[in-house]
Image (cartoon, rainbow, N blue to C red):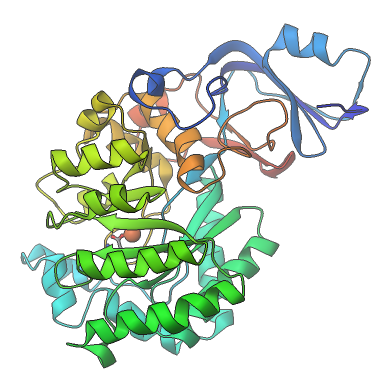
Length: 421
Ligand code: NIG
Ligand code: FE
């Protein structure tokens, strides 16, 4: 990576987590290897990293070049920009009324079966204009950025017909063009069976395969396709049909698998070679083995199990011990996980999934990047990669999950520009 001058030099970094080293998602003990240096610096030009490492080495490497701007990190912690690989960003309305039902013991799937849950958000989203959706999602994206996220995956799935799915995806595209946070779009027409197809899910599956997927592809509005494979939603056979068709059309494929019931979504993820499988609370050993054989990334969503008051959690320790790459995400959505904060997820990753702070930061940077097909561009601070980084009001990594429920972010740099300070 050559540069004539340095646009920004971030120096006097107390702990610099670079995630340099191995290519590809980290698994097993690699998830603890975060390549942290003390007394670090990062030199940036044209939005890209020219050098990142020990300050003395970085300064040596850029000696002779003029430096336009310097930023003193004052001995604090710096990590790569956080990556949220699973969100339902674009939607209308909110569902705080479900809290009371939940406190009375009504389950998530019961609320959905009563026509609430996802379906109430579908009604609100269908009724919303594109500008209304944009404004609401923009506010959430602002919050995500304030909490350290620089790249976010966003799923459709609250339209459940061609017109309204395209509407959601267009909003995500517009946000990607106008907001500092980069958005990676996923088509999730198979998020729920829409009311007009109640009892006729196979016809809805045909509509997805024959009309929706080809049109989304034609308009270039999504890179990935995802399916909610769950009791009462889409069966393994239906998910196989949709995801095989999507793969054939050139989409990357993802699956909400074995969240509540162990239907075999994890096995399907392995069979089809999904890039990632999400949730996985109820995934069996066989399912996890199938994922491992196929190199599927496990995206765990501990804020969702927390918010659904689940008795169990995804078996992240088992996954790490068996060598599955684990990523973490908010699953931001108005029902099962109304939070934009990846920092809260850090705490839950440690306390509820038993992950170490090192494993957690790996799961939210490099592994999350690979889970959305961006491993070559973001997720680590390496020469040539995009200059996305976060400076925290903390001197060490463990402080982030330890001191929970608040925002530790001081400064966010996206593509070499200070976007939060
Ligand atoms: O990932 N599980 C399915 N979809 C979302 C929830 C969406 C909603 O409740 O609105 C999830 O948890
Ligand atoms: Fe989800």
